[in-house]
Length: 178
Image (cartoon, rainbow, N blue to C red):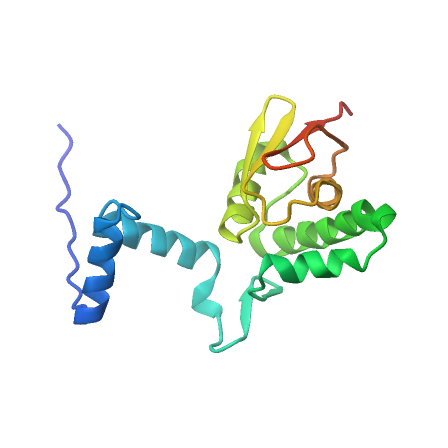
């Protein structure tokens, strides 16, 4: 019979404002409870390398500097790039993301076996919810809804060719056979 290990407990003392904030998140149904909230926070803390961040304003995820920008910032930049270049620009940015993930996280983005970890990274970084369904990539709630740019980004990141199946979110791309 296997011996049970005792459960380790940790007590933290929260300020009154912090406790009210957590209680409100739970009451509003945005969080199921304190333990799942803390677990989620630790997952983000670890996966984003927050322990290495220099506050305020200097944030790194591995070798890559991170900036928090709103989607309008990206959309304005894309408007100043010729439409026929959107996919190519996306590919170049995807290639840069590929190098960053490989160097920082040891993720081989071209290996389909590791795509779930790549998609988790993209989700944590706010790019949206990515799902692989057979030969389709589905992106719900994409941060960048420009299908040409996003197709190029994923092609550069994953080293695949994609066919665009939808023009508006949720975006669906068909992975071309190699």
